[in-house]
Length: 396
Image (tube, rainbow, N blue to C red; front, side):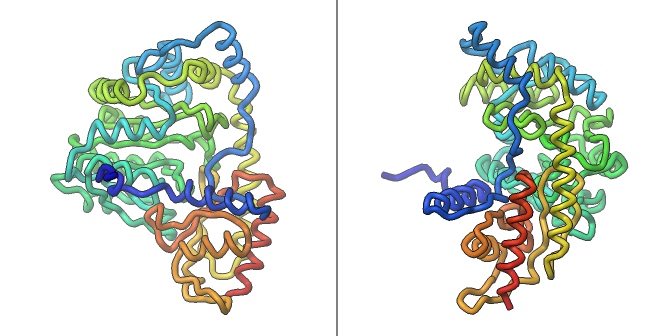
């Protein structure tokens, strides 16, 4: 059997690969602590679950409109106005089966073969692979830990060519935790004002998990608002990963294009999840804020433990729930039987020796780094980093 060449254009997500390896070790009876997956370890807030139960009892069990129920798209508009000061109408909103589908819709609607997509490193693993699926070309802007993993206007301007079609980034960033300030965004906007042909995909899925204060969206700048596609969803801020609900806010041309694509792939997303999402977006935000307070405590503890590891260079994350240290100090070191040559070796060494899962930085465009999540209990965080410190002490 000969499969499509499409499958050779992109790779399996390393985040899912590491989680699978961890599960295989657990099946052998090994106690593996998972610091690889980006999933809040909280349950969905009760008022959201109650809305879903009511939707089931009220028989919201039929096909849904492709872009989403009108009341949910109105709820997204209400949220964008309340939290971000942004004015959108329901026709600008398309609801999808997770923010990943929202990204895929947007990339496939915008990118043709050989179109260039600029992505600052580090970036979420799926960004580059979606561009490859669309036959586009990824143009990386390499950022540094010294610059808090953020790109500058000068770097952006230098990366733009006549083939540039899209700029894609996240703030707060997965995996680095970088958060762009309003002034930093304003500097990038001055570049985009000179290039109205470029569409900006702004992934804001970690919006509520922000340790620096108010979230700033690049769509707030009127001069380039029509160039922006906001990508967001409910997985991170509302602990609704399994509900699979994301959305875009974009100009009508892009929203209609995404609706057309989605009509052939999945049609409308789950009716029950949509009704639950209305309650999430318009209801009590205290559970989300309490989650962020707990993530703040875990961030403090994680940084304390990370900074005690010899050789790590680690930026203090400003949002999301990851640390992304440079671990190149350990490249070339050995425990006598195996040698750490790169970040992939480093992650596998920790998995097999310390029984702690992480994700190598190559997947995020930064081959000297490794991503560790602190979306786990304080007990597991402390236990995991004690194991990591012990395993690394055996290398010389």
